[in-house]
Length: 161
Image (cartoon, rainbow, N blue to C red; front, side, top):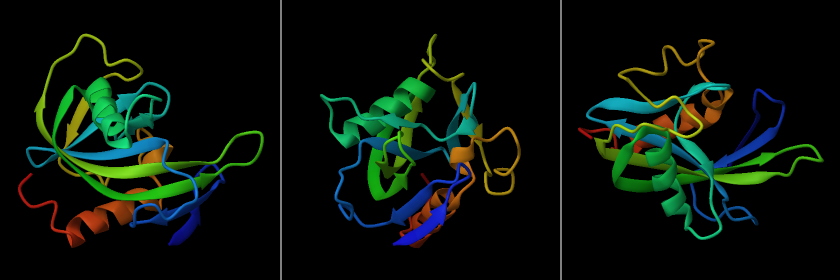
C-alpha cells in the first residue's frame, strides 16, 4: 500500500489489491478508453476528470461504475476491469471513504441531452503532459492517476482498446 496526501490535505492510502480495507468501496473512479483516446468528463466546478461518483444503495460497485460512465459521458462500457481501491481519510466532521478504481473500455458513446452534473464527454489522446493544468480536477492531480496508469501498462490493458 502507498500513502500520500491529496491536494485537499487528506491522507490517501492506495492499493491495487481488492478488499484490503475494513470498509467496502462506496465510490468509484473510472479510467476510460475509447478508440485509443481517454474519455473524460467536464465537471463545471472541479474541471476535467474521469467519471466517478457514489454507489447507490440498490447497485453493485460495478453497476455504479457503469452508471457513472454513462451518466457523465454517454459512454457504454464494453469491458470493465477492477484495478484497485483507495481510502481517503478526511478530518471530522467529514467521513472517510473508499473508492474502487476501474478501467473501462468504452464500446460506444451515445449523445445525450443531459449529462446530469457534468458538461459531457471529452476525448483526449494524452493526459499526463497536461493534467497539471488548471482546467483539470484536483482528482486527477495526485498519485492515484499516475499509479493507475502504471498498472494499466503493467497489466497490458492499454493495447488497442
